[in-house]
Image (cartoon, rainbow, N blue to C red):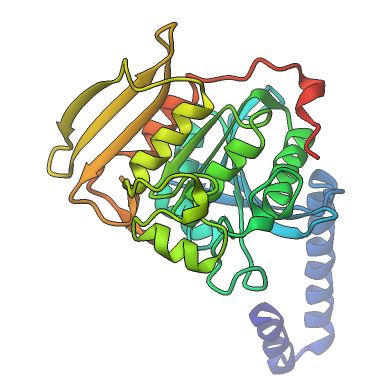
Length: 336
């Protein structure tokens, strides 16, 4: 609008309107020709996604804005495509934000797009809507949003599969992670769709099935086990998540090993590693001492982040890349 007004101002102030009019018309024809050349180089996407060039920590990548819908419902999303992508098969990391957050805020806070450049992977950021939850929380605590083929798990799994179809994704290396309510929903997805997600990262979240309504959700977030969760021990949410995860993997904590360390100038932490009979690490439990309810090692450009570490994004990617699914691809797309 400013450019148009500027042209008109010069036109009306000029003494030789005809000459200036020809000049303006010529420049407009040049501009139109340029637009046509750009459109020829950038065809519209049939899937309705909007590609936006963006700079992430000095790297020029692409953020795709789109939406996904199935018979259950619809949600918008952002997808980061690394600059290294040239139709080769790459891993995919699905990132679920916490309450009150957006996809952009979560991307900025976790720095996961910068890691996508370094480790060569796609990053999908589904976004919760106000219509589905007034606080933009994923509805991990509702019965209708905790099972395969139902509610938000069906939407998120379907969205993941759609991205896998649209791009050359390594089907054996698809992962999901989240913060708080997003972490709890990540645990739900890992339980409901083990044929899609090879590994799960839960940051400040809860185990799948920990609550079944809002009241039990408020209780379990205070460390009080819901009566219908099947666990009345009153253990902390982290320990409860570990216990449930080990049970789902048919493992125990007998062979766990623990190390303690501190980020220089940051938080101290304890990492406990659990391995299967072959010695493969199947679970890592990080307990950060003195930390709050925030993404550790994150950037202040986002929300709910704690830059004092440890680097949650980096450690999750490291752990993810150590795990891959072995199912055949045609079995992986049955999500109902």
